[in-house]
Image 1 (cartoon, rainbow, N blue to C red):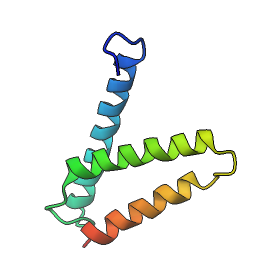
Image 2 (cartoon, rainbow, N blue to C red; image 1 turned 45 degrees about the horizontal axis):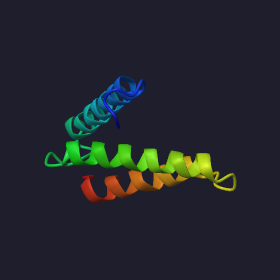
Image 3 (spheres, rainbow, N blue to C red; image 1 turned 120 degrees about the horizontal axis):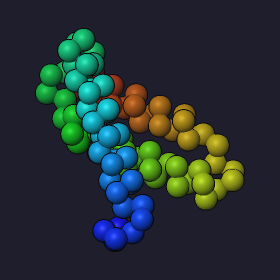
Image 4 (cartoon, rainbow, N blue to C red; image 1 turned 180 degrees about the horizontal axis):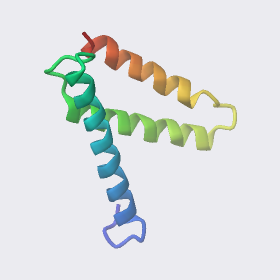
Amino acid sequence: MDAEHPANAWLRGHHQASAERIRRALAEAADDNALRGDTPAESIARGLLAAMDGLQLQWLSDPVYTVMAADFATLLEAVRYRWGQ
């Protein structure tokens, strides 16, 4: 995005804050032994953000698409399956 665009600062801050919240949640899950200690939190955080952005775009552009939350839950289950203990 153009650095001069009015939404640039908001979007950067939103993505940074969202990624940090996800990383913290993953760290807490690892501390609780729900996820393995070697879980790649940064990669998962960025991937989940990208997936949610994509799902939201589909939801906004397709009036028939109504299962965004269920699709995201499926992705979370895949993360739990791969990295859970």
